[in-house]
Length: 361
Image (cartoon, rainbow, N blue to C red):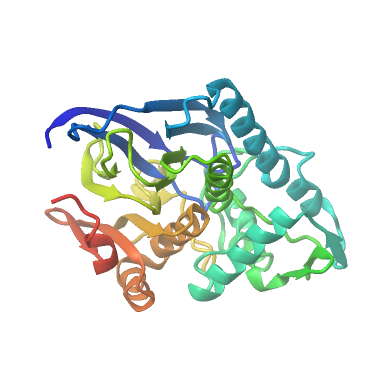
């Protein structure tokens, strides 16, 4: 089996539903998606359909094996764009008319009716918040805004201790309640501000995958700003070859190459979106527990999961937890996770067995 072509696409995330900004817990998803096409004997060639576009302040790329041949690329694109528009309308913090923006403006502590999709994402966020001891928190927006990484883009600055304490008083995932029947959300603090930027992009990937499977597409790669999910094999019968990008500054390079069949993947890093003041570096990844940008030596975290939504949120949470607590939680939960740490000599790597078995040797 010989290599015929490597088609590479870099996807640098940024912000699931907040174009051009950092959501604090959302992180820069620096992933290189690589389609490795191999010669596979006598299997007849099938059509590889490629759809690309922009959404949520970043790019999306979809590759699917169109075995039916009658699937219209134009119709696929129309339906994909409709799914993305719907998620944006529900969960964007940049659109004043989105469902989430209206919820944030609603100054009440009573139950507020919500769509099933919004409820699903907030419920998943709550589970990951509890799992990670609050390292993932969708109410982190006041801190993100305070450091100048929010939608207003008011300029980066180092806040005072008093400002930090005031913002921290408005942060806490336990202040968001949900109920399923009838679907509704309740804010225990009327001024609570919910931001789904670190999870909604992954949810959008999953929604597109569900659509593709509904039209009998069994082999695909769906990627939005670095969050991705694959199923089956590529058009030559090989695994989807997906690369994690090196956090080294300068030209983008592949750090590790994975062979994936039926997994979702997301990467969080602190090495692209940051600012410097008085010789100190402030990452856009904000720890919702102490309100400070992460300052440890963990540069990048990649997570494998069954869904892109979970991988998206967990990658952020493990990055916040840092180079000791992050790998410890991943090991305990048997997560597929890969960590790249800065060292005095360059970079060190650590991977769980659940991740390492997918690494191309």
